[in-house]
Amino acid sequence: MLIEIKEGKKIISSREVELKELGLTDHGKFLDLLHDFYQNPKDNLFSRAINMCRLMTDYTDEELRGWSEAEYLQLFRAVIDEKNAEDKKKSNSV
Image 1 (cartoon, one colour):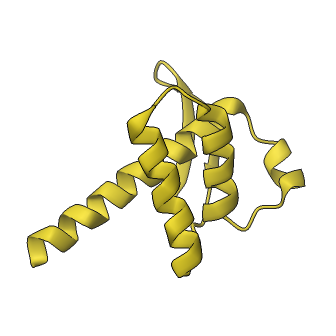
Image 2 (spheres, helix red, strand yellow):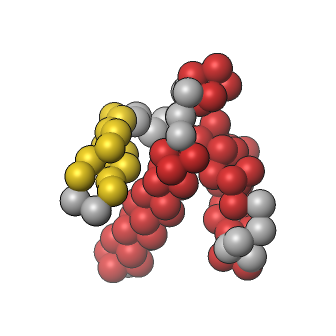
């Protein structure tokens, strides 16, 4: 997944991020993060975004410290969008 941070139309930074497959326990954590976000979108947004980055990637804390706030939030948003798209595909195929 490509994460791009833009100012207007200009790309400030881009980062290729590989999402990992989640086991059942981590999938539950993922759903909890999404549920918390939908219930209170502005509460603890950065903590949730960082936790999502930890959960969905194999990056270490040291590697994640090099990310900007915008990159955390962009990955968080991209993962939510991808999850919504997957759920829509599943519901359409049933």
